[in-house]
Amino acid sequence: MNSLWKKRVSAIFIILFLVMITIHFSTLSVEFEKILVTNEFDGAIEAYPVDFDIDGDMDILGVSIRDNQLAWWENSVESDNLTFTKHIIADDVIGASWIRATDMDLDGDLDIIATAYEADELAWWENDAMSFIKHPIATEYDGAGSINAADLDLDGDIDLVSTSVLGGNVDWWENTGQNTPIFIRHRLTSNFSGAKFSYIDDFDLDGDQDLITTGWFINKISLWENNGSRGFIERIIVSDYSSAHGAFTADIDGDGDLDTLGASYSSNSIDWFETDGDEFIRHSIASFNSPTNIFAMDIDDDGDMDILSTEYNGQISWFENDGKQEFSEHIIQENFRGTSCYAADFDNDGDLDVLGSSSPISEISIWLFFKKSILF
Image 1 (cartoon, helix red, strand yellow):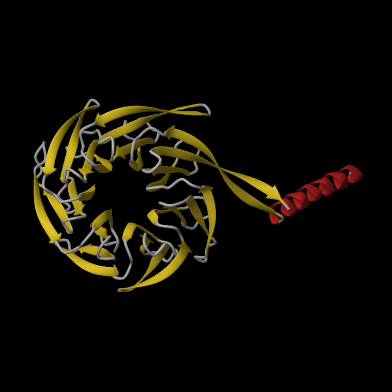
Image 2 (image 1 turned 180 degrees about the horizontal axis):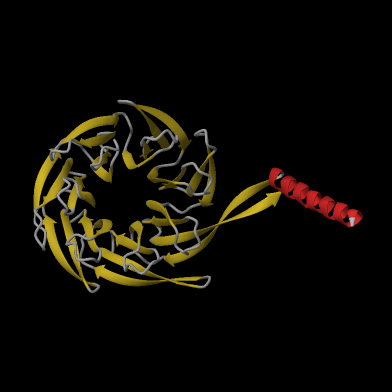
């Protein structure tokens, strides 16, 4: 018995040793499998992930700036197969340039908010059992850029924030709370030239929603701090950021506050701006050829924030954070010429996949994420 027991103990130690060696001398290789959603969505300037039909999987919203379309792609996850069915929301949105979903009328389903750059229009589309009724918000909104939704005044209904590229306007729209919302415009500024991108988050973690905006012509990224009394105070994050395009917020350095990400189209640069009290300290992520969008998520599930970005003149890549805010680029696809990028779990396997759109090649695609260990 002693001999048998010793053999079993020895076998256990050998197995544990081999496991430790495997862990020590292996690395995780991150790879992506491309799923083409469409390459016939003319001028696919934006694609955004959301569970639009509220069935438990991630669908896609898209805008076509040349087809003047708003559309959504219904995700059908069956076993290992991923299929998407296109549904047109509207096909008369002249110069459609931005789309998001929110329950605007608080009836339990998701409605659509969108901008029409060439028609100078903001509008929302009421979801009535997947038929859509258009409600204009603003016309003569010169070069309508972006629109986002949140309860900005904490009164229980959904308000909006919008930007006007050619008008240089940043506005928030107070929802008066009717079943069919009516909006009162509050102008934050009319001097934010090239106001292109907006993003909403509780940046200062005080319980209300703040705004981030980028100015293409004014070369600026600003934080608009919500004072809790229907007012916003501008704090400039960077004022010499050439052709500021995309922006995002995330805790990049893991210190408990939110930092800002930026994409500078003309400077060929993507950066993060560390929040240090009242100051914003710029750190380079990488040189990137005409970046259009930037996004942060823990893509490799290692506990820190990684970066996703697209080049208008090149590739879509993710940048691996080593935990010390040094970033290594991994190309997902070359020659994609992306105009938007986001991460979400499309195949319901517990990890993050990548969604990208390209206006120049009229494409929307998903790259499914998977990891494998490599011994060396």
